[in-house]
Image 1 (cartoon, rainbow over the protein chains, first blue to last red):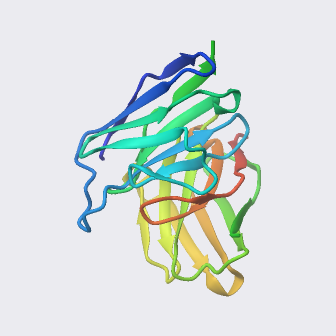
Image 2 (image 1 turned 45 degrees about the horizontal axis):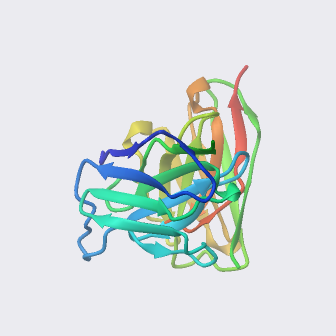
Length: 112
Length: 115
């Protein structure tokens, strides 16, 4: 399996301040078609995950522009430029290049 | 917009087979990949398997031969069979759409394996 490792696993943040989550894969996530299939999801308690970012850096419709994704190969980052109260929850990265698809362990974001 | 809805029993006995269905509304099941993903209580997400609308499947090797996915395009529905189950299979099961990039998720259905 292509392992995906997130850090940190717990991230206390101050409202209005930036936050950053790292995601590293054990293998390159560049697929045969040249695309890199790395997704970011946000999950609030009792809800299903919501995709924020696909193919490393593409924001989904309705996702605020304070969220951005970057990276290449095996190293990726999700950044929140200014954390708002609604951003709390667990963030997961997921690789869609290798089979089986795998998720990071999740990063729990809380307000300090 | 496409919506997914899981259905099935919330309680399954050990050694029996867990059977869930996912209904697709607001769009066609054709020409898409459809996935099952599960999440044990308080834990992370695990890919179970996926099926294409024409029936091709991929399964997570960690589940061995216990998992089978099927699709009924005439009913805009796809299904998961997992068995025999144990307590380790207790989880919220989500159905979701996508090949490389999963974009639409169902609300999830909680399944407990217990006698």
